[in-house]
Image (cartoon, rainbow, N blue to C red; front, side, top):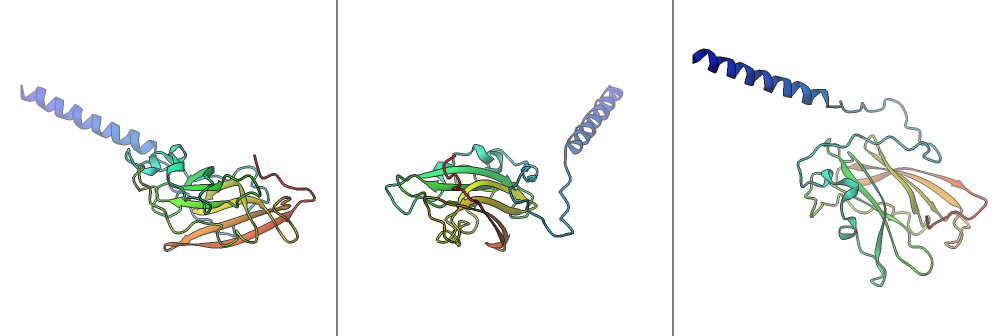
Length: 209
């Protein structure tokens, strides 16, 4: 009887050890920080590599990512007759806590000139039913001049990279001819624009996909 119990305990310990090895085998080490200057391609093609999705307990925002019902959480429109529209969602660790946060680009419905996009960031550790917004909406600092309409969104090594069509010098909202690439990084509780790259086109760029 003692031999049987001892054998059962040994088998149990072996099972726990095998389970731990299997879990460790599935882990991916964190990406190292780049040692040289970051080069952003002019058209973001091929797509920027995103950080691995972070595992999180059921019920947190990082467990849903792009599948969350963002229409319920994004900022409303300045004009109450317009409805906010989600354009695209990217996920990646923005805050540096090794949990995937959600980055959401949105605009508003309109029957006239397009409404410039804004980009909101939500903490991946927050409850999926009530996500916490990090800082203030991005692109607000260039809304009046660039009138950016987001076409691509990604997270690269903690930096948010946004590509947008918009208006440059001499452009009009009816015929935007500029493509902008912005990079933002979280510093404390606010985002800082790292750089802004602009290229121009000879023809009007699309706003509606």
